[in-house]
Image (cartoon, rainbow, N blue to C red):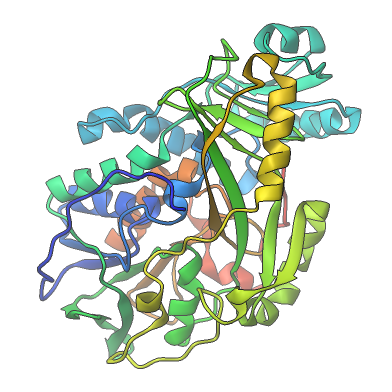
Length: 444
């Protein structure tokens, strides 16, 4: 079942031309639209389903810089700055609040990893620090767990996935961006090797630039245009509880080995299990299997691999189509995978056991999602070399919601040819082919 997400009005008329066409109305696509529109560019966002219908409404809602891989740190810090001012910039509420975030452990080896991470990030002047067992008892007074230590960042926070992406989309529309929902992009045409028009199921839009921000569907669309992008989807499961008492006074979210939880604006909790997921055997997965082996080894036992329906339907099939015929994007408007109930049952059981005051709290809803991942778990925000006018912003590997405003802003800067928000070189597309990809790192 899809999680709740605020509705956004759709522009029904497809324009004949635009400076930029954005494929996908997740948080990256609508953020890019907002910042491009603010630069005075004419922008059309084309979404096969609805705004925020897939992973942008299915994530945990964490907005953090702590626990990020080193190449992501400038983008994470820039994104937090943007989140802090976003309500004022948009003129409406995204649910963002700076609450602090904490990851906890009983394992001395994990504490040593945190110490190493903090040392490597010293140059970024983050305010994260390791809390002692005594400090953890003070921070989390309602739990019966005796944690050895916690990695706490007072600058991190939360936003509401059901609110944030729609708010950004409405902000973009107020600046003149056009957002067309229930309309799939089928591909694009070129003239002299450069983009000349984007082809949708409702017709063509003449343009010089297309930004592919389609999440887990991006690799399929690029492959249709002869562009290779190693990408794999990781299925995740999340639930929300009914309204319940507040269990913490000084941190909005807690990541533990058995469950991760954040306080919701509606008075309930979002609950999931950190470091777990499922990878289905698919044609696309087989094609890029060698690229993902280092990341699979890094994640270890948290991933399960299985065969299923994804082999024949969804974003990782090897479908072929013509631009004048129905595509896989039209056959699956919203990817709505079933949650893994065993994982959520285990997470909820451990959550209730850790907080006796919530022993009777009930699950109100659960859902699944598909995280768009790349081999080094660092997003791709880049022009495509050899394909003038083609840009991509994808592969956020579970970090897309928190990085969303800055990811969209950086993409907008690159498309517009402006001074980039941060150094874009860590997010180059070409790194997967020239031997400069990052080492696969999962910090927490």
